[in-house]
Length: 277
Ligand SMILES: [Zn+2]
Picture 1 (cartoon, helix red, strand yellow):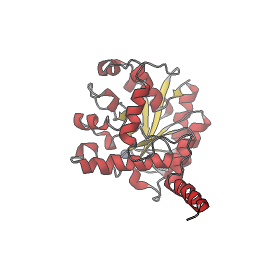
Picture 2 (cartoon, rainbow, N blue to C red; picture 1 turned 60 degrees about the vertical axis):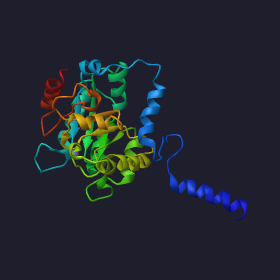
Picture 3 (cartoon, rainbow, N blue to C red; picture 1 turned 120 degrees about the vertical axis):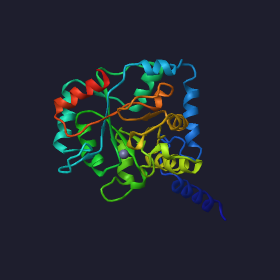
Picture 4 (cartoon, rainbow, N blue to C red; picture 1 turned 180 degrees about the horizontal axis):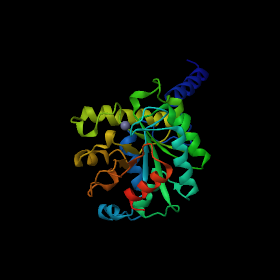
């Protein structure tokens, strides 16, 4: 084979293997899961980390959790677009600042400062309206969200496409994991279950967003101590719902509050009551 063909083939292979831009690519390869966290830890070695007890004792940051944003279908998992807009607007008008899970991690582990009135806003289950409705409204008010993807839904009707998910990451939102098919974490018994629900989909999602995926939301918010400990091998933070945190692994049991069709004032009140702020 002549030299030109070899060079051309090599470039082509590179393009096929990874379409991620070098500047924001981070360990898209098969060892990414374990490496991502440990490399990060090495970089942080000069900073003193808080103990689990110190992390557990810190003031909680309010974390909101939305599912469907649509008309009709009244359940605790659905808010109308108008209600969602009103929620976002009152947060902006009240001086709240959205933070990323990376900021939350640095606050919990290293006491890094947060902006005044911090909150995190998150979305579960990869619904199409998350990119079509929620993200543009957040961006209009200068907020960024966290989108937890159940990866079995790629390109399915009513769910985001891979491109739409990638676009969220490009726009400054955070993309996290919500398992492969929404099986609860407490049901993963064998290594093969962890492989199917966590390891493989995490790798694929990282290749789509060209970034490490360091955050997990438990399907149905359900966890136990064992699964929380196991998840700490793969994720910097994992999010539960409003149940009690695990004081031994507080980073893997960060609380969130589901927001139903409440008035904007009602949402704010409930947020303060739930997170004590
Ligand atoms: Zn879910």
